[in-house]
Image 1: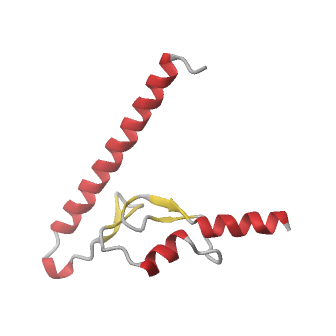
Image 2: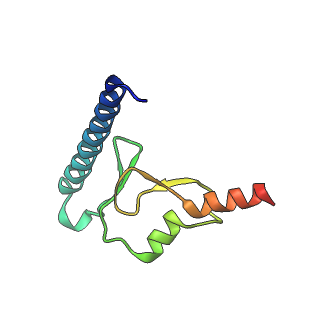
Image 3: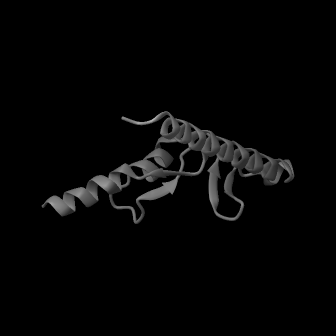
Length: 100
């Protein structure tokens, strides 16, 4: 059974992750708003390596980032927001290769 201290530590970590994610999202929006309106792309990287994408999600982008069995990467930029997501299609393909 988890102790109260372990539960508290897990909640603190979740709060920290949420705070960092929010700070990165704000930094990305500020980065875009500092550019002239005609140069804003609403996708790119913030703090040098964290991807963000605030464009309206499309099925093509969803498929490319979350279900691409032939893709080279297991982790890809999120379809919408800040950070990364898992390419479930690639994971399934890798499991299939191991099983067969």
